[in-house]
View (tube, one colour):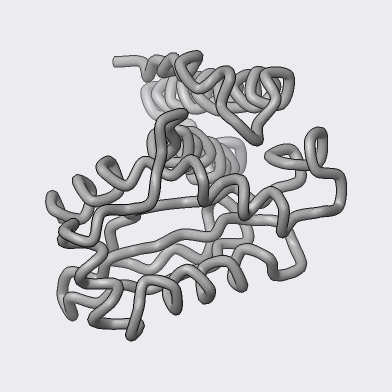
Length: 194
């Protein structure tokens, strides 16, 4: 069963994100889907041939990069909307953020500081269901920095391709634009499912 790229064209016209930037980003995402499928096909062929040597090992290592590149982008685009507003105080996630961080603003400040750190990667809000704790996590690469057993709730792509075209070196402006388009209903739904 091959993975299929989702269509995120409904995000075109989102305030703070040019259509050129978004279309470029969608193309990058589609490449991760394509490469995920290609690696799975190659791994299956190598395994059937009984060839589990170096090429097989490298494909296994590369798979995490491509798969997570696909999935993280799906979460990222999935937690954006053109019709965003401030999160409703009644959302269970907002209540949990306020309880744990002292206020929603304190959580947002922490997440924004994380996203503004030097380097490429992802800023991710995860839920550790075992401890019922929300954690803002940095992931340098698609396939490193993920906390085992946590569920991703919201993510922000802070690789340069996500903002340089529109914001140049002004990452903070990009982060603020992102906060204006977060689909809090979707993020809360992910929390409820976790």
